[in-house]
Image 1: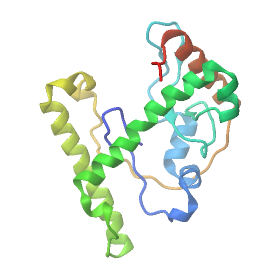
Image 2: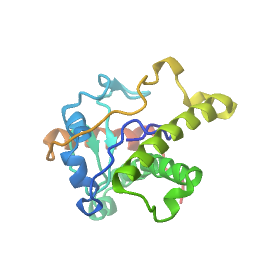
Image 3: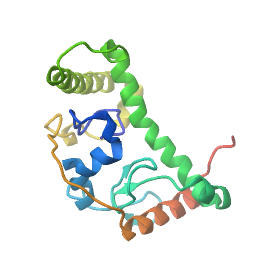
Length: 197
């Protein structure tokens, strides 16, 4: 899980790649924390509106929709409904943040561009340490670069633990997810405008 400043908030290392992101997520502690909503602050009113919505995680099609997990509408839905297309646009922009975090991590720790010739348990440690160093470097960069200071709300509000350990559980889609997604869809189409392509 990555925050708006491209920092890793929670990581889970050591699963087999063949399981896929959604399968790993459903079995992980993170999946359970998101499903229960215990990882998030209380719901908040969206800017310039009276809409009170819970905090959410952004995922792709592989993930199950829930109150705290948003995923894009299907291509068929998006093509017939402008509001859903707008929602997918903003969801895609949010997803780009996590992709950027991985890009920054790999650009700094170039070991991830090549096959790593180490024992699996050592590779797990390399990944965890790299994520911790990445977060420290991001803190340093954001605190020193004046153009990025507005992205940091308050350094005292940042978590005191760098990463949270995870372990296995599971979960499925919920009706509340459709309701929350619909409210975000209405909000984005009424309060924001997509730039021309």
